Length: 229
Image 1 (tube, one colour):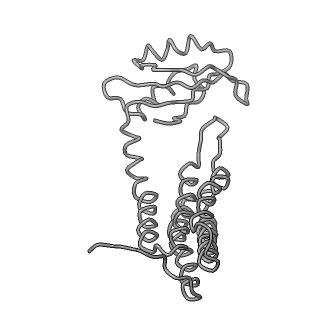
Image 2: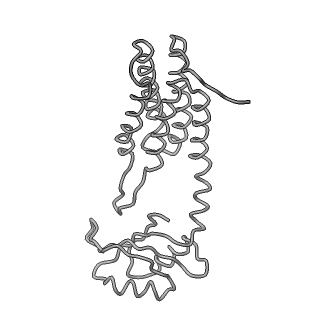
Image 3: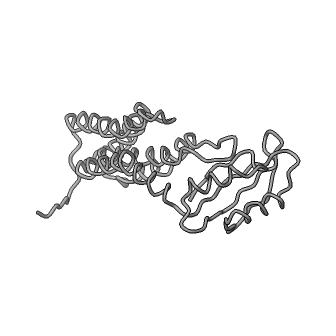
């Protein structure tokens, strides 16, 4: 069955009501999953983002149909680029310079896209997109955790104890069979300890968790955290 759409669905009172409720419902599915995990942006935030995008798209369509001028996608384009400021607010940097909240920010951006699709009347796109976003956030996270545990390399933040030299710590790392693929310049953290970021890889198929255990066993290291893969 071929799906063709030659014209935009007309904007009526009933379609306005349906679109607003559908945008809130679909984004609520995504926001509910984020809320269960106590993320910075939860159920209401996702609903508001999608509803606002939907309203913008309907206003744009109304102007185009009522006055016969303008581009029906112009305001929608501004939503896609402008939603970044809200997503940036969900991204936080931990005290050890770890970055969290990227998935939530991406989810907010996707929620805005769902609202835009509903607002212009592309219901099939909105429904399938919302279901896929929910699948990625809820199901693929488990796959991501499994892959992370099996990963053989990691970018880690290492914080040293007081009065410990970086050269001595690197020597201990090499002595335990770890390979150093790269290192960022050292700096002093809030507590005054020397810290640095290093790309490390273990030998003989060592997984990330095993790599962490090896690093934590080094006396000169006070803290270690995986930043990315």
